[in-house]
Image 1 (cartoon, rainbow, N blue to C red):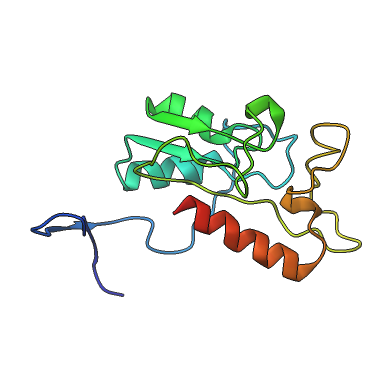
Image 2: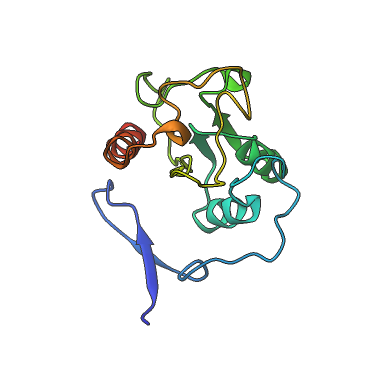
Length: 159
């Protein structure tokens, strides 16, 4: 494999620096102390921590906060984080319909998993939180086309 470099392409004079780590598949044998293990499918805070440290992030947004893993990591690293989620506990932010309150240097987005028929993957609204399914909750998008379109909308909004 070759060396890895990062640079700021928005600057008139671009300079690159060599970086190590996070150049391959990440695997963690423990989930770490971040977030809640009662939320099936949540992303390991150890991965979020490694990414934030790797890119030297000072402030970021997680618009699909889930159990709050990103907020826990941000607090541990003393980094500013705006955590939002469709879950009313975290503001009821709808990534498909709502506007972001500002732009961010970095965004971490970990959308819900596709829950196919017979799957044991987690369903969030109406089960993990709230009493009824939310129409824009990706864990309820059982049609593959709707899920793909919804996922594309998630990422376009996050850019």
